[in-house]
Image 1 (cartoon, rainbow, N blue to C red):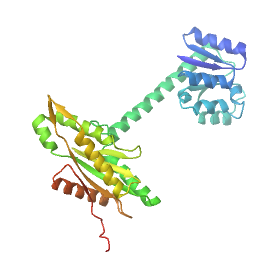
Image 2 (image 1 turned 135 degrees about the vertical axis):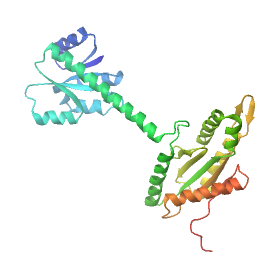
Image 3 (image 1 turned 30 degrees about the horizontal axis):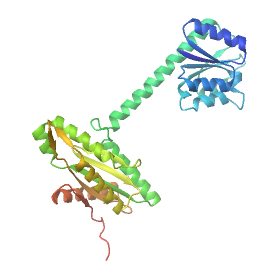
Image 4 (image 1 turned 30 degrees about the vertical axis):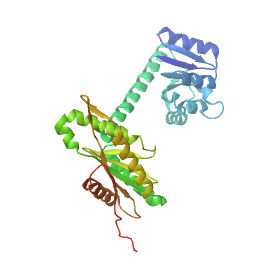
Length: 308
């Protein structure tokens, strides 16, 4: 275990460091608050044992805030060496700011070793919980084959972006994308090849998306892309680029090249239009594109006919 030991008193620092090193820990000594923060940033650190006097220099709990506010060092478990004058209010404040535990001086060798080990175990358990939460979010919101947002998540994103467009008066467009003749691919080459095509199409579609655009899999061979701050003309141009990218992508199976194309239905959000109606118009445009011969982009009709 790597332990940063921050204490302004050199003899006491060496004494505590010697105890921790004796039981096999890698100990990095720091005399000042700045040295302690730098040591935690330099290499991932399991536990920082910090004398409470160092926390008070440069503002209340400045060292603690620096560690917990750092993008790399914040995972370090902090144990404060405190005096027996520590009161309840100060202890609660420190806990709220990220302190893992306290050691009240004078501390015995055995207590030092066991409490540091306990703080490290708690840190590991917390990181495991964070990782489990991340994996659970992935299961809930991510399509396992393509890595895209799944139907639930992309539709949730659509609702949020429609609300934002309404609130700020910004344009918003969507496109529903369908792989042409995908059933034939599955029937002729098998579902494994079909899965490979889905993944390859996903990569091709992503090539022409901005960081703020959203792409998700609605199910089967159907995708939804949400294009914030995009009016009708820009959406049609973006959809055409996606269509061309897929058509230009090489899909090879057993030496034979498969011709894979997509059809797209584009709809631009209209004032006060709910997400469900916007989706329906894009879906109708998609059917028009497929009915018109596939491998093309069609735009949706206005939800309310414009006056001429």
